[in-house]
Image 1 (cartoon, rainbow, N blue to C red):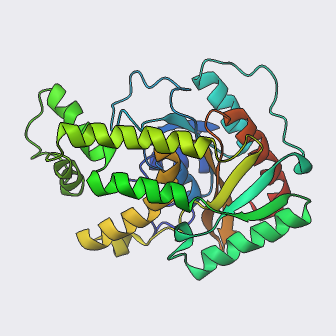
Image 2: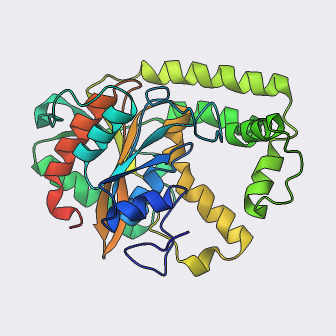
Length: 312
């Protein structure tokens, strides 16, 4: 794993860490990564780039090793929203018909997703988020307090049964004839083993519950609304702080907590970079399912308004 390009004593975020670092170091205009629970948006946030997770099915996953057939998405990391848009158009087979047109400030609304996803936010992260909201209000954007707590309650019922990646990657490995996990990193193996005891009936129940919450959430807001929150509640952890397994699993769960919501709800989501004392954090937008282009138009407007706060 490469070091964080902003501070080599810190992790870059993952799992698409190489993708993020290659963009930030100028080796690529954009990079392709996977996002099953935040693996595009987390390294983008912690390293200082833009990461975009499309609605599932927009970009083919053929040729990529499947971690979770329910949640896997393929998307870009780039230095700016427009490059993410162009890359996404190519990846999805659409082709860029015309340049991305930033949304006009008065044509959309940001809903701040207050609640449990703000728990355990570092004070510096929360302060940077609130400062960004002030900048956006000053730029004429409509912002109101919102909530996704009902959807989170529904997702919590699924999590009580199990997690899709732990169940589905195990099934993928078995289909390839892999039964022993001796060669798998212990931190990964423990998560795969956690899904081995889930009954088929429980998995079907998880799928049905998820489809229900996706439909309910999709109906709760429109294409011209997005939810906004910190991508992760913390800045990039020090490499030394995740040396022990217990600390690794705690911090890994914390950085996954917010971005994985968009995967579970099958919504497009983008992380835009902000800075805290020279370290990057992410401002995450969650759009309505299948409203990918509109989300990027809104993200481009926000990016332009916050440009003075962006790196480089």
